[in-house]
Structures are given as C-alpha cells and as structure tokens.
Length: 274
Image (cartoon, rainbow, N blue to C red; front, side, top):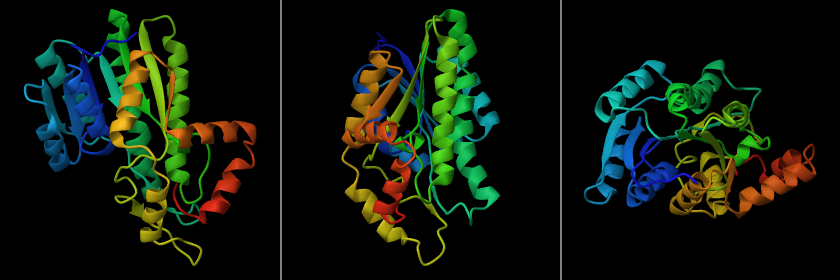
C-alpha cells in the first residue's frame, strides 16, 4: 500500500480537469503538494479551492521544456530537502487533424507535451527514488492509448507512447520499492476538447461545435470521480488503472476484436472525438 497522508506529491496539469480534482482530493488526504501548469490563472484558481492550511506550492511550467523541469526539481529539493514521494504526470493537450493534413509542427507540439513531458517527469525523479528504494510514479495515458481513433492520430500516438514507456519502466522497477502506475481515463468531464487545437479539413470533417457536443455525450465521469479512482489505484499500487465504465468497455472490446474495433468506432463516431 502507498500512503498519501504526509507524502509530498508532484502534479502537473493542475489548473483544471483531472489535475484540479486530484489536487483537491490529495490535499484533503493530507498530502503536501507541488502543483504546476502552464495555465497560471487556472492554477491560481485551483490553489484558491484547496482547504485552509493545505501545504501547497504552485508553479508555472511548460512540461515540454526540460530546463523548466530541472529548475523546478532544484527548487523542490531546496525547499523540501528531497524529491517528491509521488509524481503524477497529468498535463496533456489534444489535436484534431487528419494524418493526411497534419503538419510536423502540430505533431511535435502534441508529442512534446503529452509524451516528452511524461518522460521528463519520470526520469528526473526516478534515480533518487531508486536510491531510497521508495516512490511512486503515475503517468496519465488515455483510452486513446488503447486503440486508434479517427482524426486523433497524434493524440493516440502520444498516449500509446506513454503506455509503452510506462509499462517498460514498470518492468525495470520491479523489486526496487518504486512503483509505476499508468492510467487510462475514458470520457472525463473536462475542457480538453473545448481547448483542442482544431485543424480538420474537408467535407467529411465534423465542426468544432459538433466535436464538443459529441464529446459531452460520452463523458460519464467527473474529474472528482476520476481523481478518486486514481488515488485508489495509487494506494493499492495498481500497475494499471481504467477510469469509467466506457474505459472498461473499450478495454474489453479492443482485446476481443483488436483489428476491427478502431474501424467500428470511427464509423459510429462519424469522425468525431470520443
């Protein structure tokens, strides 16, 4: 079991959605928080919602910039005297673009945040965790890290990469006292689609409004519920966490018909996200 109370938890993407839900739930459990997000206004709002007396420090951070990670790690070490006990790499973005039209710059933007942001957050703290034989790393993938989705090739690539990287690191950590959990949220009631970088072209492309409406129809889980599921997985040292009934159904069907399931979903969704 991993205890939360009294532990220092590092969390990226804390300005909204799952990140804010995690910050509030972790603070309620007595964790000391190191919170970061590029959206500093949203991060301030998260801080304002924490319970009185919460031990929390917020920092603006672009997870795609390795030097900013290094500066943050040095600051934490100076203030806390050690690396965090738990690292949750949650920050992420998405892009709506067909692969035929996608620019290298847009693909790099998604990969740098969603994948390299996770790699930096993992590699930076893992050596010291190994030295002390304790720690827990939590990397947020997605159900889109389980199967391919029309117009989401960049996002799916990044989340498959998070899954593969995390699963491999977990094998390397076996028996060290350092745990790895990879999380696959289904539809969560967040602003990720409202904030999407929309680049779809052609008559077959859904509008941004249609994409948002479609996403809203397939998001059964609240950020609070997602946070509770993740924390339960951390406490139990679960290697893999699926969030929501949709995630469990997707996991089942992609295992049953892995070659056909993505095509069926793409046909049913009409090209939308979700």
